[in-house]
Image 1 (cartoon, rainbow, N blue to C red):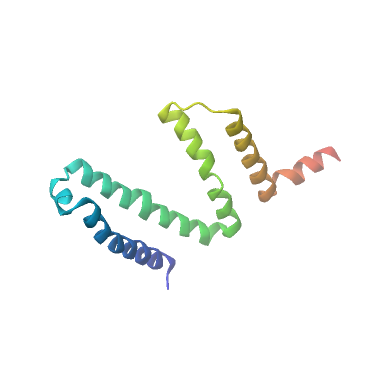
Image 2 (cartoon, rainbow, N blue to C red):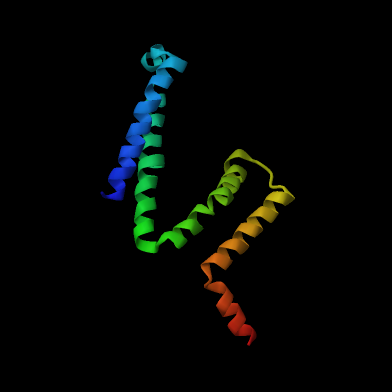
Amino acid sequence: MHPILTAAGQVTASGLIMLPLAFWLEGAGALATAGPGTWSAILGLALFSTSLAYIIYFRLLATAGATNLLLVTLLVPASAILLGVLFLNEALSVTQFAGLGLIALGLSAIDGRLWPRRLALRS
């Protein structure tokens, strides 16, 4: 089975499972009173943040391999911190700088392209 179909089935099934819970928590009236801004936000999350992300994820898995895909997922905390700084005016602490440095060091060690060059330059 194609991975995109599996992901589409997973997301569709989880949405259908969550629908009764949403009705129970929010009530059916919440859907009737939801404005166009709410529906466009839901549509944007569904199309761009979920569907497009799955397509990119599985395309990257097929073309770059699992190790390189892992490298991309390790960037999630770093991008969340940087987006918080850029858009929410959050301040970076020393701990967060250290964490970003450790992520960068770990990514360079896992990737393995930078380290042999550095060792060759020293020889």
